[in-house]
Image (cartoon, rainbow, N blue to C red; front, top):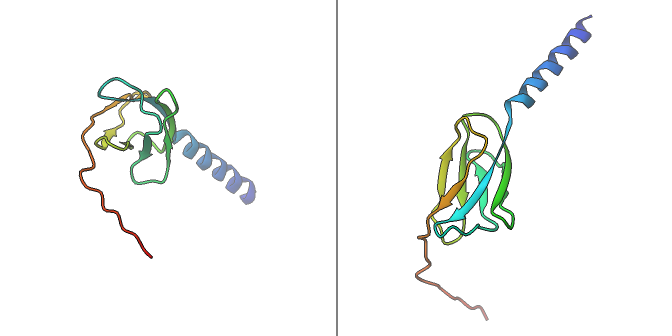
Amino acid sequence: MKKLSLALALTLVSAFAALAQRTVMGTVTGDDGAALIGATVLEKGTSSGTITDVDGKYSLRVSGDGAVLVFSFTGFTTEEVALGASNVVDVTMKSGQVLEEVVVTALG
C-alpha cells in the first residue's frame, strides 16, 4: 500500500512539474524590420535556449511565468524581456554594437 501511494505521489509531482512549463514563441526582427536569422534566445539563469529560423521565428519551453528571455545577435544590443501572461513575444532589436578595433596576431 505504501509503495502504491508513493508511486501515485511521484506521478502527481512530475505531472505538476510538467504543467508548470510553457512554450513561448515569437519573431525577432532588426530595427529595419528584417528578420534576424540565427539570433540567440535564452532563458536567463538556465541553459535552455534556441536560435531563430530563416523567418526570424523561435519557439522555446520555459520554466514558468517568472522567466526572463535574453535575445542576442551580432551587431545588435542584447535585449532582456520579462514574460507576462502572453505566450507570444515579438522583439525588435536595436543595432548599435559595431566592432571598432580588430587585433590580429600571428604565431610562427
